[in-house]
Length: 93
Image (tube, rainbow, N blue to C red; front, side, top):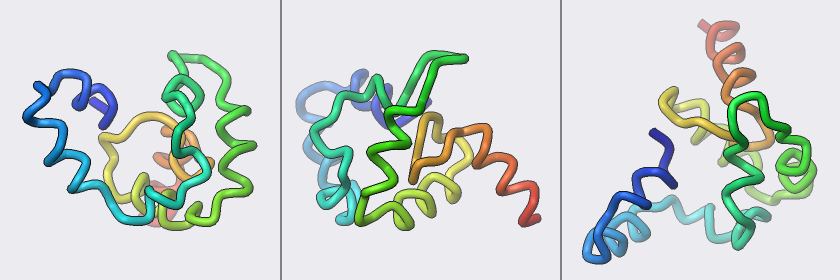
């Protein structure tokens, strides 16, 4: 389950702690304020729009590191899809 799905299941009292736990670099991300649909496309969906935004992001490296560190995360992190991150993990193992 990705972070957005988890937040959707939270009660209002649970949301504040989740926001506080977010990494500080996320406040500077180019995707901030964008809808999640771009970064979490349906299975087989196109992630090209997300990758365009990621190319100009000042925290792309931090975002990719975050996505690589947690293999349960789906979607685009640091301009890289879930499938590509999995391949990167296998290649570095």
